[in-house]
Length: 79
Image (cartoon, rainbow, N blue to C red; front, side, top):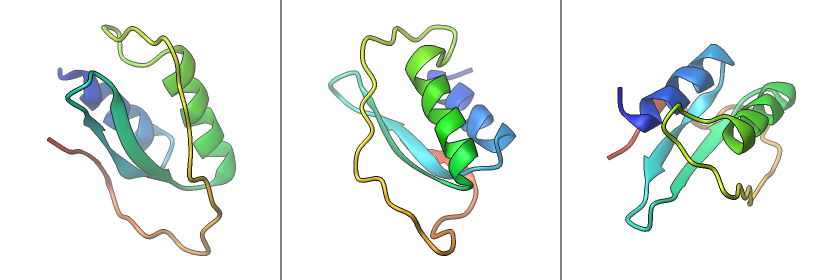
């Protein structure tokens, strides 16, 4: 299983929508939308656990905002 597929699976488990993608510099970027409590739970998972083979040295979340309705659908891994 690709590393990002664990993130996709966790996002779906939490009922979130969004996407994730590896960068050439070895980081992960993405966008997540859903209930605030579930987004917070995803952020904790991304910061502390991640996929079994990941090595998390730092997690940074930016451009956070509240949306009235979801702008995305599904949870996908982008390549």
